[in-house]
Image (cartoon, rainbow, N blue to C red):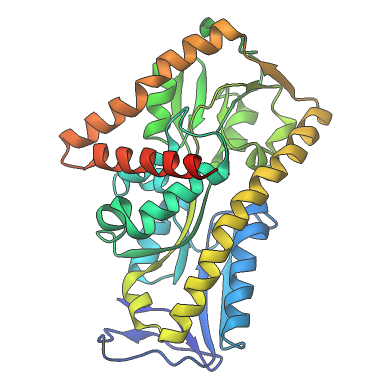
Length: 345
């Protein structure tokens, strides 16, 4: 394995390090990569503050070289690039690697939670010290550093206003796969698996009718000019944005650097979800001014949709259980964490 650190300002590739060899704490530069366009709101709210805080806590000893916009690889390649050491810290969206991280989609099921913080804090506990930590992150030899679960997804469409179940029939809508596919099929729509950076072109060509997407990301990727309608009142799932480090790379870091990173992570996760929830209000207003119509789903249609979506979680769990993945255990833990947090309020 290659560990792509830069020491004392000079690039050094460390090959086949043993656990007994520690990386010096001085002048340590880590390579960070993702697929987000420059200026993306999650980089502004989460990644950059985290990097700045780690640098501050280590008195400038640890710095970061950031590669946005798929400069080092596509979103679907980030798990492999992080595991191989091409990057030290990578943005790994579990949906993009659902064959390797299927259990993480427990936080992307429809009608599970109402806010980013509800979903994100439950996922954080499970992925750092619960079922997802032992059954998902450890087997992939990565360690979660920070994450945010986005607010519940609506359906965005370019032409079709959705007010009845019939309006959903046959619509070709972008998904990230896995649980989102199950969600759309339950409602009669056609899922089209696609990474976020590719969605704009598909909408402009008319090969898709719309998207399951985060409202903020519709704006960040410039798709608000292409969208005409969005649903209001039903959660069609969510998406996890997670940055992870190769476990071997983590193990070789000095203890003071690990401590600085852990402290920065514990601070940023609850902060970023609160800011994401807050920014949703401004983004909604921006989209309305841009001409996007928010269609409140009628009560009878909402009830029908919720009934259809109620079985998605169990179908998801049963399917994965049959493949030898402890999805029912992951689902129970996630729901218990949601209930525990709700009870504390």
